[in-house]
Image (tube, rainbow, N blue to C red; front, side, top):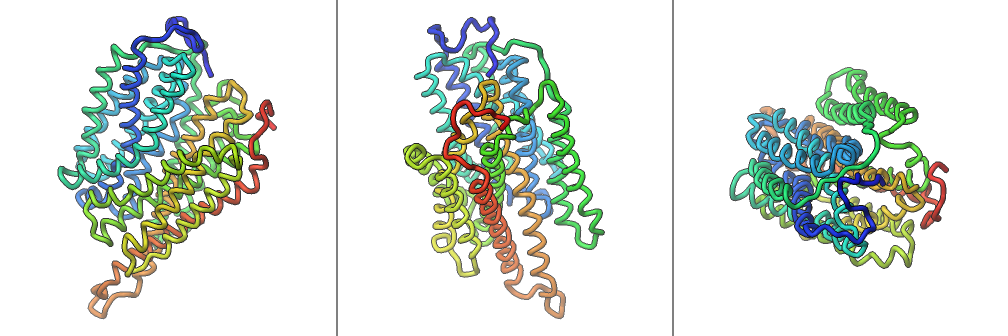
Length: 496
């Protein structure tokens, strides 16, 4: 972790406490809550935005993936910019920028503008989130107070998703889906105004070196993969080479990113962090579970509102058991980390989550929320909660002190990248399954046979949920094979 400039007059571990630290925490918490809310608040609004703006099924996932792509792809770079350009300055830039592009998204006349605004939100969130976390670290110098402050931060991370789903339902049902974006603007501006007097400026010492080529390559590679999945969903009748061109380009760009990181003097992601076998397996599993979870949330949103006819508010409330299950598992399972070990908890958690997801894949035309959704949702949430609880212990154990910050950020990065790739991949499979199901199911007059479209939707959902379960199973295999010890011993080289 980098040291602070003397301009802060406050070094971690000293007794000099910032008298405005609790006011600063309030501001930082408000900004953090906004970023967390924005990742889930648009889920409930998505069907209404798609219908109003005429967005095709193959493209609808961009409302989610444009944000998570930019956020995850630029998060590590955003952390370095915050450290060296000044945490307070970057925090304020992130808030004001987030407010401005939220207005752009709320006013979007078409899908392309909406997707661009969501991507820009992700860019500013990639500045805002690491700046907020760093500010907590340097503002609270007393270890006990710092623990409380990070506890507040963690609670907002855990509960913000549930609050976002409910808020999205309320705004979509009683105002308009556009307010799911507009609402960020007053929150961000209030937080920015309050941050000016409440937060003390600080930055890291040393030369400002940013791995811009690495950031461009990794983000470009991920965009090519996601866009390639989207094109594949629309690629009926195209030559296979044209369909595979973009994913292939994405793989090439990501390979170039690895090559650049090996030679960069100040790499975005030091490869020694991911060469550690236990850490690599855990991070890959984190990416896969993020992909499966975000994909599930996308299609469950459509199932609740389209197939079951739920209002946006009812759909938001219907997700509460999922969010509550993750929080409950994270809180109640804390003691199990030391009793059973994080590896056992990760393996067991993913296995439970996979069982819940595969159960969800059994939905049929007679399923209801109580018989087909509630049980699988709770089971999946409890499993994911246990996995997310144990994940940092494996990733951060034995990491060198100089890499602690980037290793922590990589956990969030893998989940966000998974959240970008998962909905794109699963939506491609959904569209292919739907089109395949509907092919040949028209009457002689060319009209749909009654109930066929709804049955086709269900077939597509089941395919997507089955694929999400497959991602969880693959994550389970990776953890079981690659994570060899329950807790890596202190002092193990990160380049093993």
